[in-house]
Length: 134
Image (cartoon, rainbow, N blue to C red; front, side, top):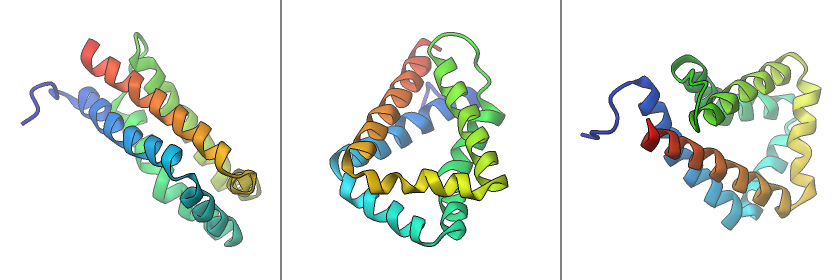
């Protein structure tokens, strides 16, 4: 169906291009929605940390860490992102009070989420560049 997806690496790159574009644009265009969502998770305490970790972070991190070990070119950015997410997940699950501080970013308002959206778009752009360069 997609001729440029011929292995696990290119599949992960394509999935992350799409996911980062959607998430990044939504963070930039609708930051109030994310402020409300993260505020709700923060109010749940450690349950909110678990929800955020398993709903938003674990699956992309696991895909990248298991299927995308690219240590050259633009693909390295996606690999490093996946490993950084896995470290963040581990810290959040072993020390949920630290993960809870991360959820408190909702209290900082829209700009924090817009910055995160720009970062997600950058990760997606590197994934796209790696897919094309591949």
